[in-house]
Amino acid sequence: MPATQDTLSAFLGSEAAQSTQLEPILGGASSASLYQFSHEGQSYVLRLLAPNSSRARHHHEVGLTSAAGNLGVGPRVHFVAADESAIIYDYTPGRTLCSDDVCAAPIIERFARLLSQLHRAKVDVPAAVSPFERFRRFRQRATEDGVPLPESMTRAIQYMTQLEQNLPPTIARPCHLDLHAQNIILTPAGHFVLIDWVNGGLCDPAFDIAIPIAFLGLRDEQRDHFTATYQESVGEDLDLGRVEMLMPVRPFAAAAGSLCNTPLDMSPSQLEQEMAADDLCDEGLFWVPHMARPDWPQWKWGLFLLRMGLSYLP
Image (cartoon, rainbow, N blue to C red; front, side, top):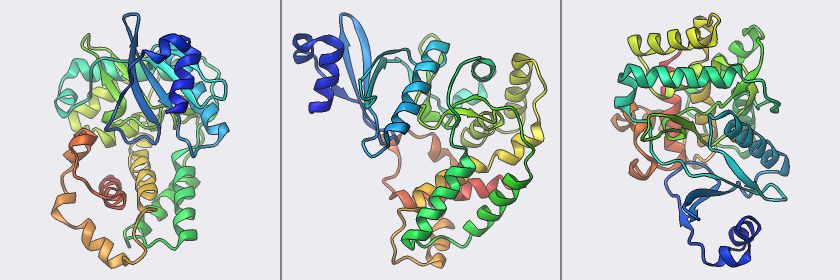
């Protein structure tokens, strides 16, 4: 692993790097490669950024991860490779969020306050690629590659197009934009740490409220308590109607990306039949750690996400 060894040597020195044991961190959905290691009593994560991403995208992720660490909402960064292809940050002991957590009012409150802290921060970070733009790019790729899409995607396209055209502008603030359970670490002390900042940047903060409501399945009292705590912490009113309209957006964008991997010999009607299957009905699958999830191809997860997004349409 030349890249990992070079990064370790630059951080620790050649002699210490040679005696350092790297343990792969498996089970995430990221295209980056992650390794855990220890040195002088401290545990770290070495993250090799996605090799197929551009230098500009690496620069974006490095900047966001460093800013999040400085704010105390992400792991603290200790080292960045000269070409920004790798970063080393604190290893966060703990676990990813689980379904029981969203039923616990104190946990929901701490999470809402953490998002308020992020959105109120005065930091110099680049603009994010909005979920609308990501959706368009994935659609274009699918069209260029001749990838079949389920007929239900038409509803998603119509909704995304109309919403983006009619959504009033708002003040952009630092956002994460991918707040599903696997990117939210709860430490033994009860603190939250947000990881995987590749999609983050300046954007509409209502996305960071809508995305966890959708991906964490917050319902009724849970959702109301989450939004009320956020409003109290951020010190301003939250446009709840805007949040509700944005709830399908991130699932649709994620679905469009996964469906780019659909086999070319499948038909739209076959995909509709697959999407109606009983095994796609369990929204709780999104809570399951990646290593324990069904071994579905990417396109089937795309159907699952499309179905999720459709369930949130007004």
